Image (cartoon, rainbow, N blue to C red; front, side, top):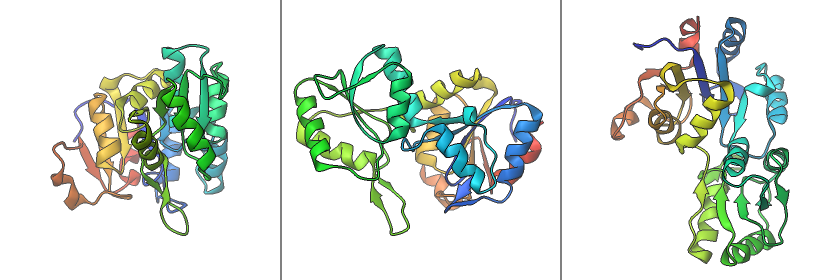
Length: 259
């Protein structure tokens, strides 16, 4: 049982609101309750391929009405981080529209001519030519940033190499480790909180993974809720050296907590 009133909600997307392309039962009512109550909330995802507008449209097709402004991606968090670190900088980007749009919107120049950063995100088609270019730019002094550490991503045919796996290849070639902005870095939680003007003392993080969602929420000082509708099974929780604040079967069990 939670001991503090939750006024702001952060939620992972895959495994919490949708699972294998379908909405988790109760997710639609949970989102409706958040919206009608006026509670501030954000849907967080490490996926940097899509813009928030793209993701809102994809969620709408499965019956989840999530406002564009309530979606926070690792691409947005990365763009905010870079703008805070080096405003109006430049970057060589391996990624898709979600990442390039976010960087353009904070005033970054995308270039392969002596960029300040090499920024690696998710893409459906990692190019050997792009990876080679990234390696050479890092060797020449560009700083290495990656949107998220996930090693694989899902597809209908099975696992696909994702940002973390490609980052490992670049690190092996250059000896330079990237700075990962997305979960489990609590920076993504804090930047999301700032985006909705939330406070850690009155915010909950809902996730289906102990090693990303729960640990990032815990390190950001949030009330953490593990749902069992995604990756983590209840019997696996005890293997970790930290615990969520709360464990529920799915977001359907949280509807009455939104008041």
